[in-house]
Length: 588
Image (cartoon, rainbow, N blue to C red):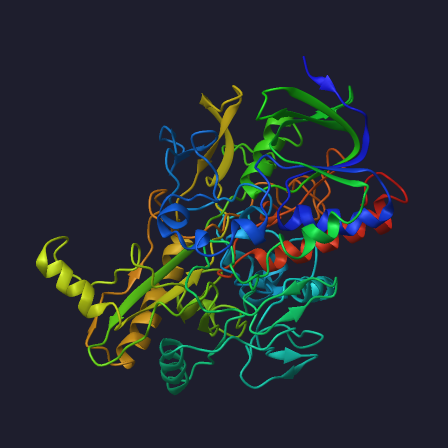
């Protein structure tokens, strides 16, 4: 039987980016807040110190900072006709675990999704007609506009120390920035990172081809910086140990060095680590949450934490899983198309090509997570005519340099032997002279891509695993085939010695890493019949439950999700503080 604890005003499940933002923003109210994190504590000054943090085997290959799939996992299948099997090893995506979550080991790439993404169904119907959207694509608007989120994007960028160059300030196009972005109120807090030789070569060629290259915005600080909350951030050292690692120089915008320390200054905010929430508890009506049930994973003791307000701030898949286990909202049924929890799950598509130069050295060991130069001509550019390839969405294209580490960085031309002396010679020959052009593409919702509870497999607490049903569909095939053509053309124009065949990602496998950009499952919108959350990320069904993170996204962009995740967290915190706490109940 669970031990019932004294009640708190607010319980927050998860202490990563969104949990940290909500705790920071709501802490000054004086309300008693308990934050439950299922992983352990992290201290950057100790845990990310050199030489400890430069252990590629531990952190990159063995995923030390990621979810332990021996304790919890997901079952996977591509189509409803298949039997899902548990994922026994991390591959396709890498959820974080512990205080800071994935924000402790992310690359740092931070985008603002444009208004035509947030009002996607309306904008596509206006431009291309209602018949352009396939019948098996439950595409929907988010219920919030780009103009409404702009101040919250700005707030997140200044807190997270984003380095970049604005492309559009109050309608005035800025030289060297992204000419296709929506208007922003001011410049980025920090100038762009220095660019490497590979990015410079790509930018020169792209410009010659008539494209519009710009430096990709990222939470790798180009200069020492003090954010608006007084948190000090170091300068990027281009060390090459960034994604999958904590930052040794405190130069990567992370919740561990930004929002979480500020939140913990408030004596009314309590953080409990190793506290695994298994269920959101509800009253007899099923319309009001009364708190959460959790297990102390160190002792096995089961606890009940009563609370007036519950905020789910874990990773997207954890939030959706908890809603399914707790009966918050009607589960999605792919046959009837009814229900809302689990619908519109999306991953991220893409394409890539590798270039090999005998006469150039790119020094790949000088690198940082979000480094890169991009073109957005086939993504955010709303003037790009989608009917040429028939898809909805697009792809942005980048040459960067996230690492050149000895275990995992081995670019080799097609046909190279997989072992032996010829393999060794090829590794030595091409290490310095290789670059990759990558395209990151949108994924639109499909009727049979969804999340639900597995009927067979359970986790360590005997609860059903969450089952993921996903495959790239025809829309994504159109996008990545087009992206492959574009990157192939750019690659050829860069005049390499050798070039691999441009490879569009046509099928999804959970085995190789692709991105941790999962979205959907608890989507926001204006209609409770088609969305789990309203425009403030408040549950339509249980009004004292709010849900943060990319699970709220009704589709996935080619862009990384952290920008809107941060902006929506501030938007939701503002709604709770200024609206909900003054008059609890549905905000719509």
